[in-house]
Amino acid sequence: MPAPQHFITGAELDADRLALLLHRAAALKEAPLSSRALEGRTVALVFNKPSTRTRTSFESGVFELGGHPMILRPDEMQLTRGESVRDTAYILSRHSALIGLRTGDEAELDGLAEHATVPVVNMLSPGHHPCQAIADLLTLKEVFGDLGGRVLTYVGDGNNVARSLAVVGDIAGVEVRIAAPEGYQITDTPAKLYTDPVEAVQGADAVYTDVWVSMSDDESSAAARREALKDYAITDELMDHANDGAVALHCLPAHPGEEITESVLYGDRQRIWEQAENRRHAQKALLELLVSAPADEG
Ligand code: CP
Ligand code: NVA
Image (cartoon, rainbow, N blue to C red; front, side, top):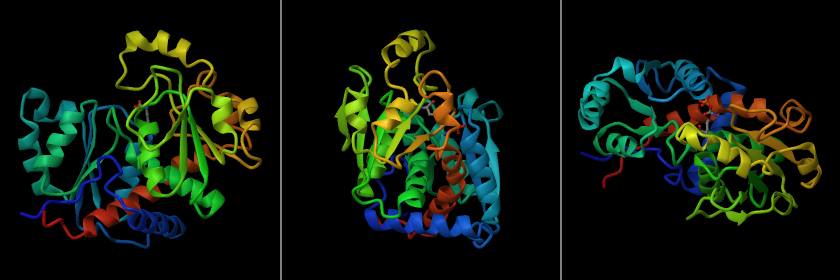
């Protein structure tokens, strides 16, 4: 059987498909009910971890495309009673056009993608958050137009969000820089790595941050993380070192007083709330692309 096209890390996109996706996302934002790409189809959305934005944007987005979002929580599924990921993939594939999964276990995502016969979308895993990254690029495109050559500096913990920004930003021709303290940096990335946030934001068009303690991090490490990352916050002063007109971004949820100040979070230079709305528009374009894409003959 031909393999379905998945969206696990963001690297599945090439520059042309990403440009098309962002173009479609902008069109769908203008006319949210203009596509019936999921008419009569069900999308299974499995949340093994908490979510506010991903859940609401996928659920409303699937509805706007004419489809039915089937939200599944682990306590409602036999997975928690020992049913295998493989068998779960077989069943969900028979009832839905696409499966989204948020998980704290990368192997669960890989297993689902291996065995599903419909596209699988990563709605956040410990290593990746590609749905966030496409919304972030849509937000940058709205502000700056062409993305090629723009500079985005991520400041803080080198986590799933940072990794996906680096992957997807690179495909779009954005120079992604990551400023993180030693021990908190990602490896094996196209991003330019820094330890000094002030140096990293020189010439930046966007300054981005995320939480210091992610859902997959051990809570017992929280105090050490906060101490190590305390100089890696977006403040008005840090924004002053970036380009004139630079915007502040955050995937949310935010912790004002930790990785971002309240004045930036609610201030004039942020595009954070638009960025959160853009989750829906970007994901709708992604869903359109995946359900209409011819499957790989691999
Ligand atoms: N940014 C993001 O994915 O938020 P949620 O965890 O609320 O879905
Ligand atoms: N890095 C965060 C992102 C939340 C949207 C986490 O994984 O918890």
